[in-house]
Image (tube, rainbow, N blue to C red):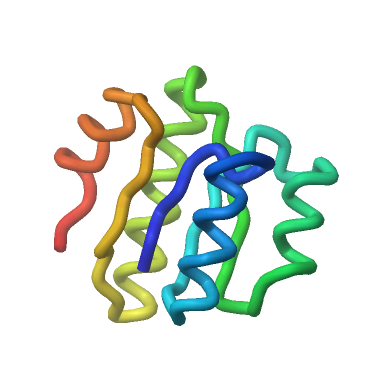
Length: 101
């Protein structure tokens, strides 16, 4: 599984698409989960990709995203191989505290 932030557009969008084509289950954090970028990403990828609401400046959303990823890891018996937080040290801290590999 891969967890990528900033998937509404740009590098995050392209990375999420690419990881999906490589066969990873991708959790794609989007600033606006209901926005056009998130919808375009869902349309252009397989069912292995799931979008979640993630504003990397909102500590509550970061914590909820970490919980969601942890639940997906537990229920799907998957491992988290890639985390791409794009310069967000808060996500790194939450990851180290909350995600068990």
